[in-house]
Length: 410
Image (cartoon, rainbow, N blue to C red; front, side, top):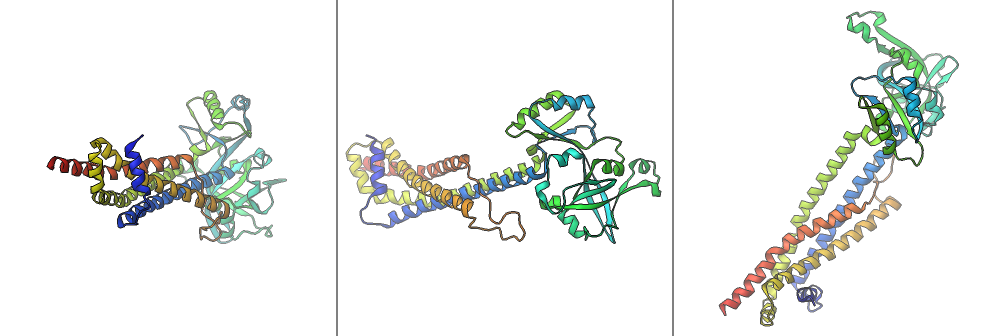
């Protein structure tokens, strides 16, 4: 039988008269539980925000994006396109030309980001569900149209009813500017009408207009060159497998980015913020562990008579040390289990019922997103074990020193 553990259980679960020390122990247990619960919920919120952000990216970003490493424009030969089209798992390849330009409508002007796409983009249904007003098309006869972000649409005062006044787009001719030739011909221009309004997310909505690729080529004068090739992967196909095949086919000159890699900076910032919050909460948990330290210290003082009895029964210094380490472990373990259960229950309730709202009008979601991950529970448990072990070491040593010093004095 493990004697230190047996005695520790008796000290922890004793139902004799309640004392101040028992109260301190219970407060310490509850304190650990509250800290664990808070840490689990905070980490789950960060997971939920990251997952929500990835879900937003999925609405308008491709599964894989091909860009050229050394230049801003890319142009793949028909043979190379045919080669990568044969890679298993590739469903669509969309050539894309993106650039900023100035638009003018009435007396209003705004710098926006144009995204030129071909007919395969619409055929695949991308952004179709995000059209909140108008229709989903970009070309009608010889007339070009644009799918306009709702922020651009409202700030420019655009209207579907005005079929006589198109939106003007102006773009600088870089070749003329390189020669320091500032003339009327130095500015390229084109016209379009709005066909639909897109509502995706704030940055996209406030600056993006989707237009036909030919119209964009005429405006920019890119001479067949593109910004990127966007690839949509077949459902159920692993993006990493397709990415590896594309890298082998294209070589080191091209960057093949998954959706997460396209937003690597933002996702890395979320993970770093989550790490710092975890460290801060671990520090707070360390401060809260002082109640455990004092509880064990007072327990050592209260149990002096019992310790003399144990000494007479032949308990060794190591067993006595382990006894108080077990008491500290039982207090923290009970608090951690309580905190994890409460954290899981509250997290599940937030997922299911959305108890706590964001308090932001016209937000894409009403309540804080929650996503619980097993590793968060494991890391939290490890932190609790480390902090409570450190908090228990000194009282345990003190008990050994006090008991065996008394023996030597006798």
